[in-house]
Length: 137
Image (tube, rainbow, N blue to C red; front, top):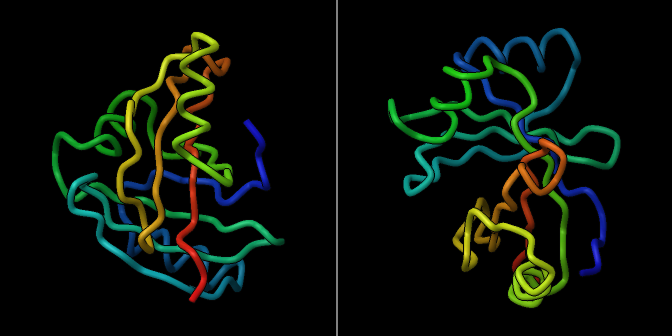
């Protein structure tokens, strides 16, 4: 699997409005994208930061992955996302090497990307998100 670059760091927050104020007012970051991803139960905000995006994630469902993360670990970095050229090939390669995948098939991510999560038990405790960006038009 060839990783192109770090795409973003995902940060779980309990209060997106408060986190937005902090990152914008205190650090001077400029919001570039906001989206609700219903099937993942999250509301997201994206900020560019030193060539990498910072994604703030707030759960919109009480039993979604971010709500579970907050309940068990509290707020903070939830995942590391890396861009791959071909997510289908990356998943197949990882599975062939015995790596456990949370997502057996890619699913829709923010801005029509295709994403899949690797199980953190096989990545030394890091929830790793594979991201295939949509073709540029």
